[in-house]
Length: 282
Image (cartoon, rainbow, N blue to C red):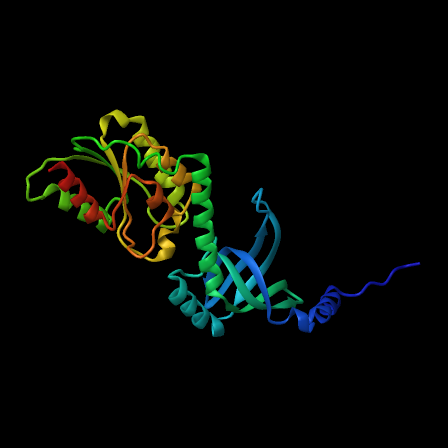
């Protein structure tokens, strides 16, 4: 006997009908954002759930915030958290399951709870610091003896950044006429590559550690999201274990990043880092 099938569009419409259930409308979902992008005012992304032990993805779903809601949601989220809606954030979203016959399954997001993301960021910082304390390294860099004459300064910063320029100007034109020798080790100081880039710079300094007295990691002020790369376990371990004293001046006064807790000395801004070096040398 020959078989007669139904069309794919009919099957998809049947699936859409099954998914049109009240419990799948305005449901709150916890997920991590991936591949966030804007197109014609709409925000598209993937929602993923990762295994907490392995980091492997255990669930994923496409999602979207339509332009009619995006401006309101993104503005409220930025005002509350200081961050843009971006890849890598853990979020609590409210959405409705949608099944489109041509585009498949997705979640249409109507709201995001910013308090959840703020709590997640704080939890992440706390877990990193607790781990560093268990490893017994959290105070290692702070315990290093400050050199009597800290004249040879290795700088980790972005070339051309205003904060780097302010630091150099303050150091080179100090009223006491003190002379410092500085060398820049360029690094990306915002975005997703902060961790890898700063660690690469620290590794380069480590290879020439005998040529320097102290290390300065500096960045001017910016959005909280731009500074989230400094809340990193791998970067914190590098700073904590580094054989030279490290000053951090990454330009955000209200909140401290993880590396501020493990560096030898934390100051508020790049110019404050220069002032500390001048005052100490005098």
